[in-house]
Length: 301
Image 1 (spheres, rainbow, N blue to C red):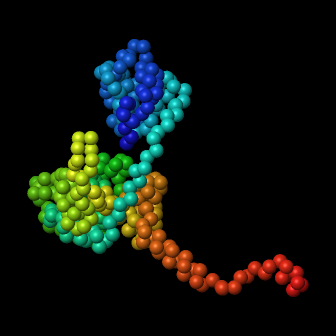
Image 2 (image 1 turned 135 degrees about the vertical axis):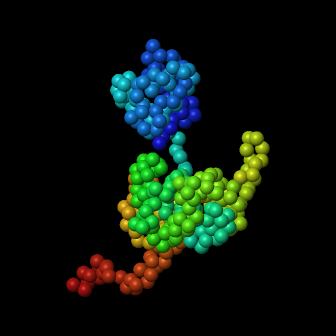
Image 3 (image 1 turned 120 degrees about the vertical axis):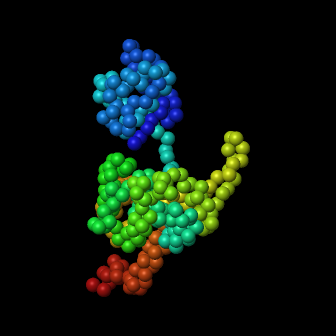
């Protein structure tokens, strides 16, 4: 989903283009509302009319460039080019297995298995929270993610074995008839775990509370391993285990290789291993050159 709010993420030029091009004389020059619900099919002229009727700022939630609506409506012949600020938001955090075990020990008991599920499966935390027993086939040792729970609206299958199977079997032992969720806290779905996560990371030496300067004055802020690092770590572990890339993507739910590559960021250990392999290769090469200088070759002839 891509959401674009005028006046926040676009330039002033984009605001002018949106208001002048998208609004016909019969519509208000100033509008307020949301066009679309995250899917291009919901960005219709009727949705635009409704948004323009409110007055104020129009926000587009079309899953693509908001200018697509104007092109389809015949108000633009082509989508205009709007330069965007360069982003430096590549996520790079990973958790090695030893650190994960230390983190798991520091977590409260009711979060140990839910977060272990994230580490071993590579699922998103929202997908784990929404997992219900109707999605689990223990006899067939498989979990099926419903499309409505997936970020990209595609369902997928997660085979259960090893640690993953142990996690689900322990959850089955604690299953409650009044709760449909696989992971819960006293029958209630798992909520915000940030504070518990921060405390566990600090205890395990994987994070710290630091003081940062803000416009409102100094504030304490957590810095360290994040919950999403478990997803990145799971994907990297799959790659290092020799699982084919297309299978990793099917398990994690990534649709494009570009996003997949951002998660598989090379670690310092990977670089060191590469340097060691290069050194070993060079050590096996002959110490004498194989190329005979041209002058020496002529003299020999």
